[in-house]
Image (tube, rainbow, N blue to C red):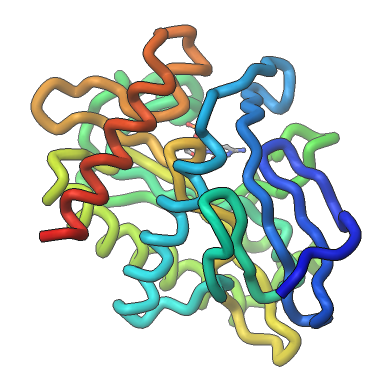
Length: 239
Ligand code: C5P
């Protein structure tokens, strides 16, 4: 299926129409942003890794019964997905304290939680994606209670399956952000991407950061870190 006109350009991806109104064409970019767009840069080859990693992980989640927007990979940077109406919520699951959680609650980075935790933010760049609770989301008409329950149960299931997957790669899944969309029949599917841009991935032995925190915090070795997690994922899938 061919890409048609550009529908939307985001921070990390371009989205094009196709011949089929229910199918979109996603092209992953190497552009990197952080802190709500305040920090900008390029991570060479990131678009290829994020496209391929996200697709492998979504295929894996599909095999575990979690519906996703994935249709098929077109080439190393581009993928066909089902058109969804994005639910304007960013859903974050955390297994270990880091990032904004550590800052907000004064919990030392690396503290392992008694059990995984979830938070939702209002997906709104102009407002800086503020945290909200389910009552806010329902009051604002962003989602129904049923949709929120479905999203929560998918998000925890994703965490269970991806934590186990990454463990076999010697990688600890610290936290991650998911986005969900609604198909034309109203059903909820996992959308957006799952990649080192949207997950914190630490080497289990050394605790080395293998994700976008290397870019956010100017730690260097960003490209190598992305390549390393991709290599481990592929090695695991080949076994
Ligand atoms: O910054 P914070 O600690 O809230 O991020 C939690 C997780 O969500 C991290 O894995 C981060 O990469 C991801 N995230 C994201 N997009 C955002 C905010 C957070 O992918 N806009």
